[in-house]
Image (tube, rainbow, N blue to C red; front, side, top):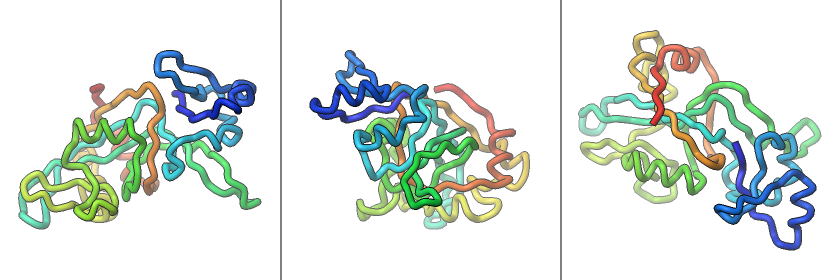
Length: 208
């Protein structure tokens, strides 16, 4: 896993001293994952400042179906997932730090995405897109009536699409794995809970 960076020419020597490398193919600087303990040292060069979560280069897209509350048709829905990630938070001294979160989660209430993740979703899941206003969270949309399907109804209600209460319900979810050259980033909510452990144990995982 490597993270693309925007390093000004005047700061290239400093970047090299902090473990940043140059990719001749894409003509860009990047931080390899072996140097992620230096994330704060390169923080000023991280693009997409709004995306406060760094995902691994292999993410998963959870698939299942739900009943649209607008038209009562079954519609496919997805969620972005990851086995671990890095999040920027404030420590007890009120200082910004990058922390590794070593657990599986599905992201909800997604506000912004890095370009590589956005392009993947647009190419593979056109029903997952920003709300009608263009300024709201990314949502699943019904493939029949095109109305947005609220994340709260997909994640927060026990027994809903991405909140299984049984092995059978979790097995109805499939996880497709996608590989990136560089780490995608996201600004979204996440949580933990027994239902997520059910998904990791019983949902099938498939490579793209």
